Image (cartoon, rainbow, N blue to C red; front, side):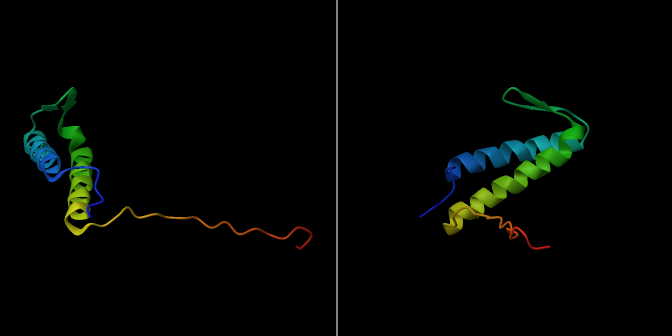
Length: 81
């Protein structure tokens, strides 16, 4: 059972769009996806989103669920120093 919120078609479409944006911005041009205009300064953000999409694709392919992280905070007993 797949755990991604995306379908394969949606992920493929987004990956294609962001790869085009990466290529355009890397060459100095700007690129528009929907209402967002991306420029060369957005290269780290584009790469970060591509990594996110790759993770979602892996989750879809492997049926991996979300990773839950739980913090544990030690409680000190009162009166002890």
